[in-house]
Length: 342
Image (cartoon, rainbow, N blue to C red; front, side, top):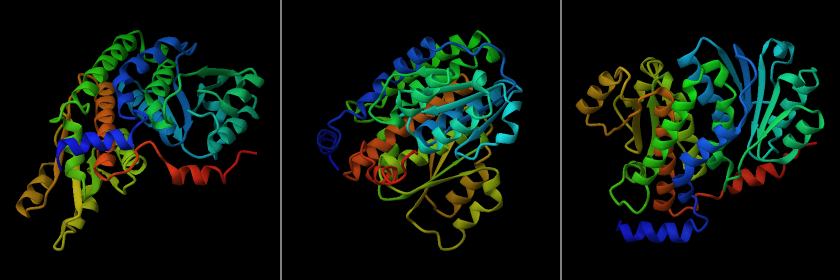
């Protein structure tokens, strides 16, 4: 495929500028962080509830806090939050970009019914969640809008992260600024005006294949997001597996008759021990193609966000290659219209 075809695909399939929005991820991340008021006390145990493009915020915060502190963060992606022990949490954070997410609104109502308004925080652009939070006089953080909930990740994460400043300490300010700068650089390096960019190269390798993302537990938020963006942006299937657990089951898919459509993508932080050498050795011995993505990052948060923006942009290039409109989510829209909030 000629590069002119990719440029043409963007012009025809992405008139709204979905890819362009990544150029301002760093700015939006930092702005959301700076505009949000930190939580008044140190968080030892917290709950984060959200779905889809909002739910990934909980995954990132959970792993990041575990990496930095002994605090415990529970993440729920279902309206069935544990009502019987909500009182044990220092803070209850409900994240919904639209403010109209069925599960998040229902979970919010359950928490509010327990008389825990002083511990509840809603993060949203507007909608029912903002309306009901204001009605019961609980705290709500209003963030800037984006073309789609999934592309609003910087705003959602920046605002949620600020709530943990007292828990992490003032060093979080510096770390957030550093991550914002790296996001700006990475977006420019992987933008479409650079033909030989890393995000497009990843997309090109996936094109026509079934991607399976491999990583260790510290990469879980990146893997979760990558799988979801392959689904939402490129309208393709894929999955991920965590290692070393995968050594006890997943690896058997490469015995004897290996499906040539499968493409293992190994995602890892440059600072972590490479535990993938045995499976890489095996695949090379058996002439099984795989693709390794090593991501830089001076800090764990930087690694997570640089990994996410890289694979997000790759998923949009993949949409161009498969001639799909990355912004559209027609099936999700169809289902949402049939799952109204009462």
